[in-house]
Image 1 (tube, rainbow, N blue to C red):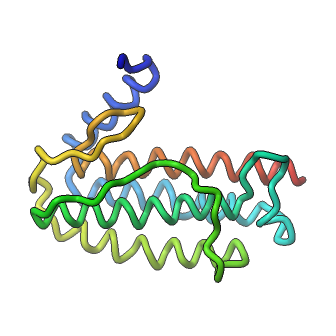
Image 2 (image 1 turned 90 degrees about the vertical axis):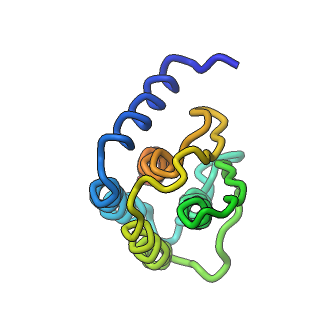
Length: 173
């Protein structure tokens, strides 16, 4: 299957930047470009509507944020396995439409995101950066990505869903 031009452009960015930046720079890029904007976007959704779908067949902010959390868990497990030299578990980038039952507010989601991401970043920062780059994780749009490319993909992924949460907030204003 041929990759469309926009996907090819994004893949080029992922491959080039993941090879160019060292591991601390990759982690800093994620920290800087995701946590605060995600918190801000989630905070814009009216608290009483965080779990409400803006329209039939659309995702609520809680469902979108749950997907970001799930991708954090999947990415962490896969990258950790690859760096250790183990076979990575499968990663699927698809919104399941579920929510984490014990998370009620935007703040609950933001706190959970930070509780998941910071230990993940700490583990990634222990890597040299050249571990098992021949092992890839398949992505349906961007093709096979090594762990460094997948780490940078997580930034693009999260930013896309930040935009989705912002659009939900705008619909509820």
